[in-house]
Every structure is written in C-alpha cells, then in structure tokens.
Image 1 (cartoon, rainbow, N blue to C red):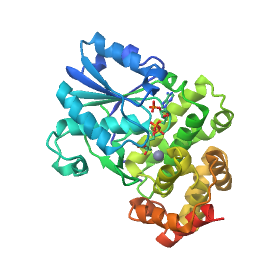
Image 2: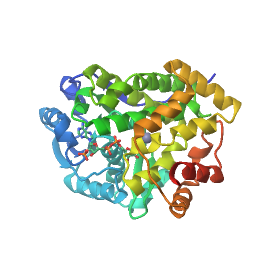
Image 3: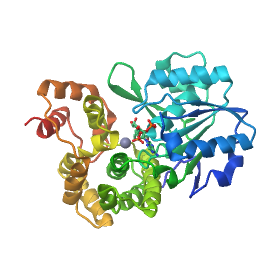
Image 4: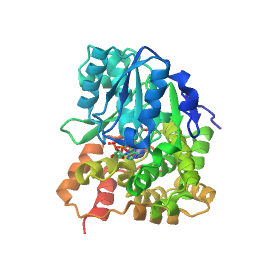
Length: 368
Ligand code: NAP
Ligand code: ZN
C-alpha cells in the first residue's frame, strides 16, 4: 500500500464560488488575467474575476493572446508585459491552454533574466508568483496539478514546464462556466479527462489515493458519455464533469500519463485535432497492448468493473467518440514516432510499448 499524496492547492467549488469568496483574490497589488480569445468572456468567468479584483482594490491587465496548445513565445511575451505593468500575481481563466499558460507566465514574471527555453531549467528558477486558476472546460485538470504543457515555436512539439511553484494557490471550480462550451469541446475535453483517469490508473506510479481519484473521475465521465454524445448536457452532469476532470488532473499529478498522450500530440499538430479527441483515438490500442500482460489485464478489468463495463467496451467506445479517421503516409508516421520516441509515457504502464510497436499502432490506425 502506498498513500503518498501532495496537493497544495486550496480548491473552492460550487455555483457562484468566486462571488462568494472574493477576499481570496487579495494576493497582491496588481494582477495579470490570462485568457484565450473569448472563452473567459463567453463563460462569464472574466466578469466574476474582475468584480472580485475590483472589490479588493487590485489593478489588473487582461492578456488574451493565448491560443490552443499555447506557444512558449506567447507566454514569454506575457511575462514581459506583466512585469512592465508590475503584476505580482496571475489569474488563469479558460481551458487547459490559458491555465497552462498562466503557470508559465507566473514563472517568467519571477525570472526576468531568462530566455524563453530556460523556463524548463527548473532548479535554476526563482519561485513563480502566485497563481489562481478558473477552469472553463472540464478536461485537463490543470487546476489540480503543476503541469504547463507548452508548444515549442516552429517545432510542432510540446514540452512540459513542471515546477513545484506552478500549483494554483486557489482553484475555483464552478461548472456554470462550462455551459457556453460547444458539444464538440465538451465531448473532447471529457475524453481527455477520461484518458487521464485510465492512463493514471494503469501507471506503476499509482498510489491508493491516485487510484481513488482516477476511479471517481472515470466513473462520472463514463456515465456522462450519452449526454455528451447527444450534446444535451444537464447542469448536474456539467457539475459532475467539472469535479471528474479535476480528479483526473490530481491523479496524473502523482502518475503522469500513458502513451495515448504523446501519440495524440502528433495528431493535434498534424490534423488540428483537439487534444482530448487526439488522445482518445489511441485508447483502443492502449487497451489492446495493456492486455498483453497479466498485470495489465487485472488492472483493466478492475477499472472497467468499477465503471460497470468491460475493457473491450472502453476500447470500442473511446475511439468511436473521438470521431476521427484519416489516411496518413508512412513517412509522416515515422516523423510522428521520432518526435515522441523519448517520452517517458511509453514506459508508464504495465506493458511497455516499444518504438516498433508504436509504429505498428500508427500504421494500423492510419495506413489503409
Ligand atoms: P483549450 O485549448 O483551452 O480550449 C479549446 C477551445 O475551447 C478554445 O477555442 C477555447 O476558446 C474554447 N473554450 C474554452 N472554454 C470555453 C467556454 N466555457 N465556452 C466557450 N468556449 C470555450 O482546451 P483544453 O482541452 O481545456 O486544453 C487543452 C490544452 O491543455 C492543450 O494544450 C493540452 O496539451 C493541455 N493539457 C494540460 C494538462 C495539464 O495537466 N496541465 C492536461 C492535459 C492537457 P478560447 O480560445 O477563447 O479560450
Ligand atoms: Zn490530456
């Protein structure tokens, strides 16, 4: 048994939780609000955050330049602007992209002399300024972990900035901010959260606690797939999904993710497939390969039994919900494999997939 667990974020949940806890925003004198193009406005979260900041007499600047799969350079630029404005803390509002970017900007504010790629040299960094996170998707669980997944400019490649100072001081989980999310993104982000749960559950780094989070998250998401698929999502389901995705984010904080994640990054860059759907495409193969060893079979059947289903049904349903088929030539697939072959994710499961097997998976799925 292993009960190791670390989670320094104070989590506040429930409808209107920001309005009911405005005093918590008093983390400094001036703040940068980090957002995407429009989700912070559409969701209503920006208004609630500005109201809380104003009530505490805190100056703010809105940096709305973050796009999906945030670029390292955009985060660096945000850090420069935040320093010029004298920001001493950051609020990230949005899906995983603005939340991950907020973590990087908080790092750049505290480290004025570094070049963009020096952000990955964690031991050399000053502690980041404080961070508040407000998710508007139910997917990444970024509000429950320190991961900041950044796209390297011009390389179609992601690298994780993973500093012990990147945990949110506060995370506000209010499902009402996800009501404006389209069927496509509601489904895709739920698929992402489900992948976090299953990939975390299967990891040899799991603890009893991370598995509790993974099962809680997976069950709630599994039970929501019918509504998500129809695009008719009740408020009750939205609330369950928000807590489930948070749980998935906490689970991967202990374990990291498995191979669907890096293999999916390539589809995101190549076919502009949203992150969650890109990972879910590989869950059928993930179940197939993990079923090649005894430990994998046992864990998969325990996981599926808790959800009231079977590993085969999970293997069928996730790729079907991802709704993605493509024909990709072998040369491109070799380039995909070379980009992610050093990722630790391939070894983070009972059955360790080799480079040749990774190629087999890509070819099975995309060479017709
Ligand atoms: P996202 O990239 O943040 O957003 C996807 C789209 O949804 C954007 O167009 C966004 O619009 C829109 N959107 C977000 N919330 C909305 C709302 N409430 N109403 C209407 N539109 C809304 O999506 P995501 O899937 O949450 O995040 C993906 C990123 O997170 C990837 O970069 C991935 O690598 C990373 N990730 C991080 C972790 C982690 O643990 N830290 C885990 C998995 C993935 P705007 O452009 O206007 O915002
Ligand atoms: Zn993910």
